[in-house]
Image 1 (cartoon, rainbow, N blue to C red):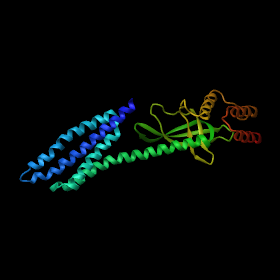
Image 2 (image 1 turned 90 degrees about the vertical axis):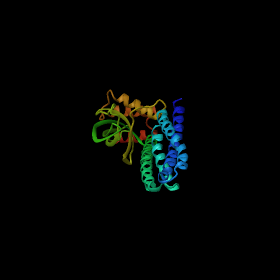
Image 3 (image 1 turned 180 degrees about the horizontal axis):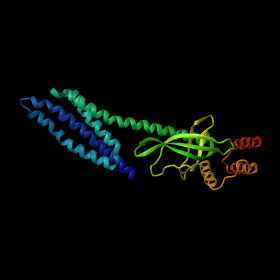
Image 4 (image 1 turned 135 degrees about the horizontal axis):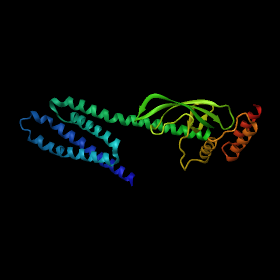
Amino acid sequence: MMGKIKIAGLIVGLVGNGLMAYALYTLLGGAGCATSLDPSPCEAAMTPGMIALPAGIILSMVGIFMGGGFYVFSGLFIAIGLGSMAASAFTDMGEMQSFGWLFGGMFAFFGILPLLLSGVVKGKVAARQVEAQRLIQTGRKGIGTILAVNDTGLTINENPRVEIVMRVEPVDGSPPLELRKKVIVSRVALPRAGDRHPVWYDPADHEKWAFGTDMDASAPREVRELFDLVRQSAGARPESGNMVDELERLNALHSSGALTDREFAEAKERLLRR
């Protein structure tokens, strides 16, 4: 239901944007009448624009509050810009000819810029999601413990950007490693030193890694198992120097499916060599 309301809001808002562009085109296009000896023909031509202007404002505002939001608001700026520049390009505005280009160009720029920035941000978010999926499918698994949370001094939408320093213990028995990542976190759910998280990392490039914070009910089995492993390890961990405990832990991971046959064999070989 909410999705339909947002779509309706977007449509209503864009119609309002179109009326705004038409109104600006008509009203600015009639600016040449100010120097005409008989302005009545131009005044008649400007009447539709005078009607369209308040209608466009009202519909745009309604569209924003119905869910069109960011897109309708940016569209409003673009509409004002395009209407003004079209008036300069296709009508005789007299001394205001250059004003239409300057005024319209400024509004169009500030309408398009947020859309471009939004596209860049969404592209980066999508790339991170693809990278995270790749790591989950092909990367190594580990249990991470946050060692430090360092403030970077940057805040985005009131949420701080911090540097996470995490010690990761691979579940296959590989030596622990320390990883760092700068992320934006919720100001009401700040990570803390000592928190434990499931980790997936690229063994060939330790700059590429991801850690889980929340688990969705539809998450793949291997993701749920690693979350379960983190919860189980939160209580008491076996001493890394105890070979029997380590072998039992590896065997349990292999039995649960958290380790593949190859990963289990490699981890056991490393442990026996050590």
